[in-house]
Length: 158
Image 1 (cartoon, rainbow, N blue to C red):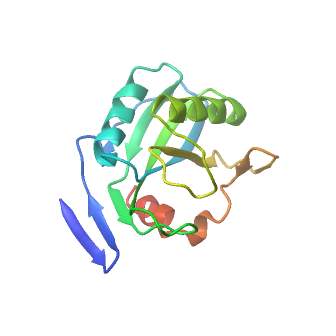
Image 2: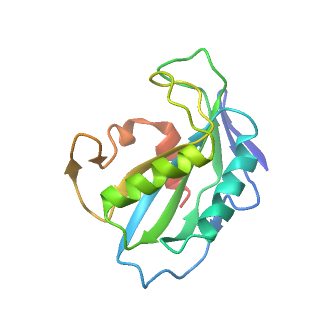
């Protein structure tokens, strides 16, 4: 499915996006994770990410949104981004979840060359339960989430 939303926005589906599955009640926390990328075959990478997470006992993926194709912001001289949102259940703290997600980005080839650079995979904690954090390396809810169509539109589909 490729559905145009407007001149620069388009919905896509893949094997695991969107998806909804009950379960994960044994975990203490619910987190909303923003998933993004714009290097290579991003939709296949999202499906590989989903399979990778299925093999981890640290979290349970309950829901995923469709994938939104949208133009880059910040540094605009790059390919369109593909973005989705996942709802996961975990017993990890927000800090441990962040560490796990950063490690996962590295496994999937993420390089941080400059701010807003092209990336293979970007994983952000949008929400963690109803918690609010303002720490050096972790701000929850994610800064400016409510101003980004790349977050708002996938969230609206969950």
